[in-house]
Amino acid sequence: MNKQKITVIITSVVVIIGFVIATFLYNSNQDAKDSLIAKEKESLFVRAHSPQMGPADAPVQLVEFMDPECESCRVFYSFVKHLMKKYEGKIQLTIRYVPFHGNSKFAIAILESARKQGKYWETLEILFEKQPLWGNHHKPSPELIWNYLPMVGVDVDQVKKDYKDPAYTKLIEQDFADARELGVKATPTFFINGKPLRNFGYEQLEAQIKEHL
Image 1 (spheres, rainbow, N blue to C red):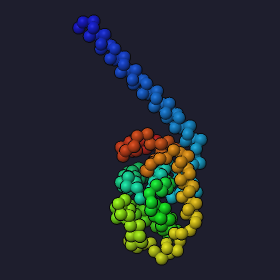
Image 2: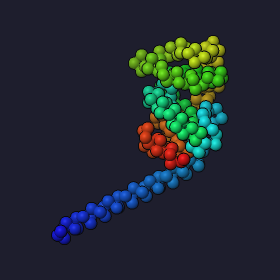
Image 3: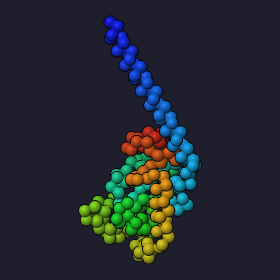
Image 4: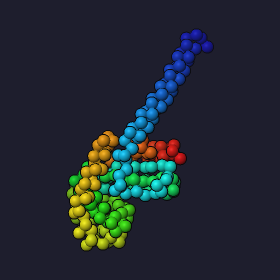
């Protein structure tokens, strides 16, 4: 092997090593930055009104900023359910609202009203299941939601009395304000133990959860 080839090989190796080191330092710095933000803004992730599933002392605190009319939230819902079952007892899920779509506030008010009947998660599931019908972006029909509530044992007449409660408007405004402060610009947005999901995707979400287990 001549000197020129050796020089090329050495140069390539040095470049690769340099890239690896730079990537490691970047990730370390980003992780430190995320940890600092998580500590400084700890109060913004969970509010007293936030719906939660899973044990409070779970090693993974998963916060999802979501919109019930968001198609991506619907798709991710099944995967989040899968993770909650796969790592049962190790994840606490907290739901926060970011109503970016036109009928989201209506759906959230119904969700919260159903919650008073102990039917929050069942209602969330049926809303996502039927979302292509009531939340169709070309021809939304939010009034269809009333037809779905009996399917999960919700007292519709009671919800119709409760869903206009101004407390729900304040709840939504608080979640929206926290979302803005945390830099949430799309749904779903996930935070794992106060740190944002670094790369969006199913596998990436599970991988980052596993880092904390």
